[in-house]
Image (cartoon, rainbow, N blue to C red):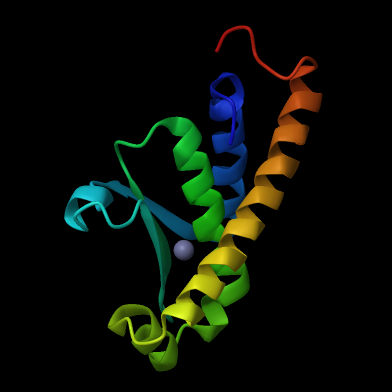
Length: 131
Ligand SMILES: [Zn+2]
């Protein structure tokens, strides 16, 4: 988890990675719309890539969701076809979905660790006094 004191810095760093890949980030009541089921979502198409994040999450949680969804972009977007859609949304292959989610979680933990280290080295003491 990202500590609140550096969450703003980490989020800006992650948002920069995402923007460099031309991924749109949309803030909306994802949790409410999915009846509490999910905090974020990555959508890939031939035209555009987009990450949807629950607008009401605390910033530290938004960091994790953004890193997790970016993981889907990096690792899974080329697999996002009809088979992916079927496995994901039909609920018929839950072990497959669990595996893909675990991959995105591992990616997120690694990326957040790197981002935190980068922020801590930039700010010297690991936090910004004005935050
Ligand atoms: Zn996921």
